[in-house]
Image (cartoon, rainbow, N blue to C red; front, side, top):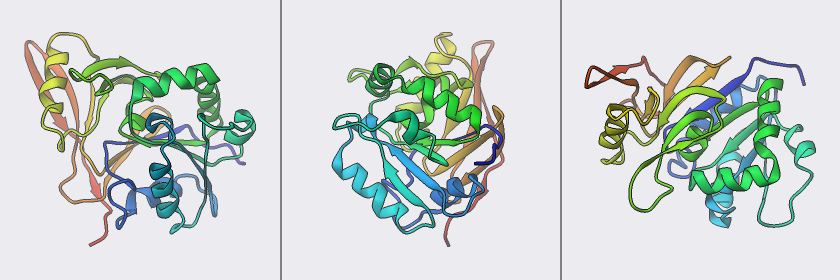
Length: 236
């Protein structure tokens, strides 16, 4: 595999689990591997490797020019280093981010993913699979409230997914920023993907025309939202 730039693609929500008839974001992710018929591997850990989630992944990616597979950490687990480094794209699914990171650390996956990232394997994911790459994320892993979670730190700042689709997300993120509990960062709507090259935003795309993303920060007791330019790539 020819070494590429370091790449992460963070989806605010949606994608194949919800938009099975609109796979434009999945196509975009695969295109960033810059190889024909890329190998794409799902890490469904945040859903406890739920069979239904894995089936939806195969149903979607089998329609695209790629070689889909997945890694289970709750059944017989393959040699992780060998498996990960035979992939062109690693796709992390949504679910409980805190539980996912705990299981990953037991298996040594954060170190393997960092090495994969440095080698040019594309890292991508939705919801939990988006916030996990940042320094911090806004998570619903806890039942009582949205909270700050320290994540892998491959990308600087924080991330809040589902910014337009879950009404409690925006006020929770704003309060955390105002209280100084979370780094400034990126808020991402459902159906929007933020593409990072070498740790910097390269492009933001959406599978529906109203999808948006913002840089969000607190300044002198107020929260500022600066919208990014978003390219609509969805089907008509």
